[in-house]
Image (cartoon, rainbow, N blue to C red; front, side, top):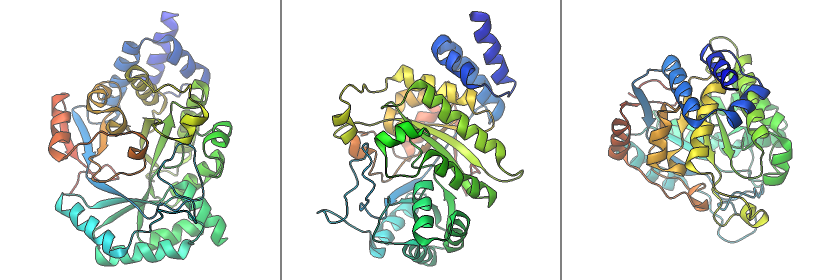
Length: 364
């Protein structure tokens, strides 16, 4: 058994793809120490070994109006209910001015599946923001929103993405992936696109050379087998990207935040992902996704200390200081970090901080 574990770890270090059975074996049979050591060695091979990257951005929600009703989301409000807002241009200006003051130039702009607005609303919004702030980077929407807008406009995925890019979209987040298994999606987000539809949007994004990222929210109703299925689907899509295109620049996994969610009420037996399990998944992700350069540790959901350990377990990025974040924090994530704390967290862990852009080039 020990020999099998070592063979599989060496196979990953040789940049060969581990199959579903092999990854499942490592998850259950390899020690955490073995996974961490091998994942860190692979991280050193694929990225700058002494560098950990980070960035400054702000997550602005276009609106909290969303018909989707995902069972893990406390933030959304269904159309017609009280408490709905739509962010105004003046509010965007205040938020973006503050972003620039704090050394950032990108907003993560998301709004859920809003049945009361169409593609033209987003095109106009992007154009307005870029006219006011020509250097602002728009990291916006996600495959679920793009699929929703393409279906609503009847323009198709390719045309919808092209129009969004022409209006100012510069990168597409991996939002809405959750777990790319339709059994799970039917339980936690039945009104969102299917797993294949999510992948189809990303495939087109890669074909038109959009910067993208891939994500996974785990620790709810999925099985370990479905987590691994998710990783393999991401890897296979990355392997199909046209030569010379960005594809997935990073993979980000975070544990389900359950506080007060419908999913917690539906499945009270769900236990929080502990530090050991999170680190194990980060390490396994690094070993599985040998064709994606960057693995991000989610300090926002697991805290600084666990994220620092992940930097020795395959992760090479700590994401953003998150000037503003509303969705995950509404379900119990209450960690915070400013620029100085981010730099200190990276240096304390033994690495050199590198402030970056969304495409993982150095910030300038």
